[in-house]
Length: 102
Ligand SMILES: [Zn+2]
Image 1 (cartoon, rainbow, N blue to C red):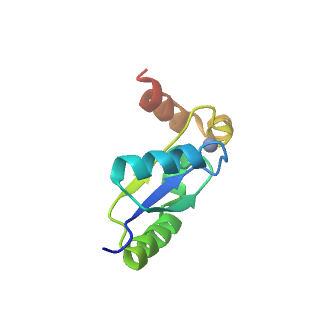
Image 2: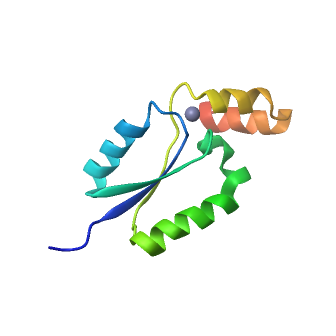
């Protein structure tokens, strides 16, 4: 019997996504356990939290030998709506183009 296989999840703090996301990662990457790293609206906010993420993801990779890192976003993200309302115009246009292609 081999060692347990870990995966790493970088996702929003939203409690609605944790169980289905863990299940999806386990099923799609044959992971026994999922290390969970959360930041609010991480898919839109990743450039602001990248240093913090490097440390946390590094611990997951080095201590648990995780060989897959899943970065996810989700529908109806309150943090992304907040960031969109409180972001400058140039960033807002880039986000809109990225997410909607316009
Ligand atoms: Zn969210």
